[in-house]
Image (cartoon, rainbow over all chains, first blue to last red; front, side, top):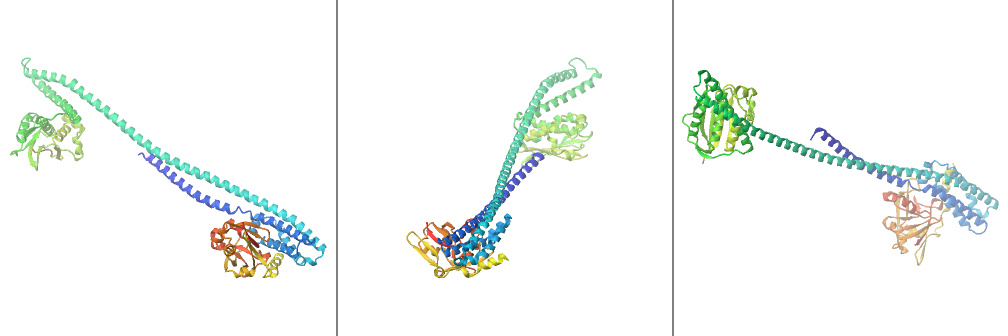
Length: 448
Length: 153
């Protein structure tokens, strides 16, 4: 995955997590707020002030009833005490807290307390009180009751403000609900984007693979077409050229003048080399496409190697290099395609010859290592740098691109060698000391 | 000044009911039981310190368990009873509260009887300080002061 896409995923993931945490924290905060709202919804003080109003009236009625002979002395006193208990509650507990919080003018309650103290003795002795003093008391409480009513309205106003605040709190809560919804929504969105990003990445990878496949198929087709063209357009005319040169050289068109002999020899050799090049190309293609056929025969390696040395000797000698076979070869027998293995040896020998200095030797060896026959081609050439490694056995690889021009070669030889040896269940490898020489080895399973 | 004088008068003991006076009537569908303070104080007493919404800080309340009083009138199987106060306040009271909590009919506050001026002589009380559940405002309405009647609904 591209680094930017990864970063985007990381950001989205972080976003989703943050959204979840925010939503969870908001929910906790919301719960606390709801609890607080529940607690502050008490309507206590309104009820309390209204009750005072009512208790004052009850007291006035009790007094009036007593005066009219309709009520009892005890009831008048009881109503006084009830009013007293109510008024004393104004300065205690939650009611006191609320009145303070509402910041309403509670002077009427203080005044009420003054009046209760003032009339206490009168009420307790109401049976002996003068009607004038009783009337005066009732009037006093009438005036007070108007003020108490005013206080009740103030408290109502304040508590409706509280109710408004309560509504605002509810509004805030619903706002937070929306925020939580948005947070959860964004979290979900981030997760969806994450999933889509993954899907797109997967699709892109698939598309890239498809493109590569198409490109590879196109390249394969082009190569096959090229191979066909090589076969048809090069080999056919080359056969005619080679034939003509060979006829000319053999004197079929009459005595060859001495001055013509050298150019005809050069032309013949180059035509042959061109033929080898074309064969290499075709073989490489056949090997890579798996369409090359192998004919396995039992082979005695010592005699096979002797034959190969003999047939490659003239070519090696053109480089002024001596080709020889180790003495005392063991008698080993393998199953293989004589012609293809001959090609392997020819390729290795011609490589050795090409990269040898004039006057040196190329030596072919054979030995047994456990149940395998190991064949070696040793030269005293320039050697192969370590950096070449296994690349050497890949197609169109040469140690140095200048080699191709200097020595003549397609860069296919060793890949053909490897393919053929692989097909025989063997392995190719080499040892090389730069400046001293190289030995190529390939092994083949012995016939059991 | 006025306030101090007022409270001094509030807590003066002159307004206390006389011992033999009926302070509570408990009625089921068939009969009524009348209690004076001595009768209530003769029942097993429970005492605890608790805060409530109508006092500053906390005070010690003592009196018989509500469930004992309800039991005496066979009211424990009822779902609700009506409670009436001297000041005409009345509510439907869930009997389950009397079973679930140690609700008392307090006859004393801080070791002394309560006058009507001090929300007495009887004040229904919950052990609010020992159970956070009881701080819910629903119980504020059930702390009935100046209780005088319990009637089957």
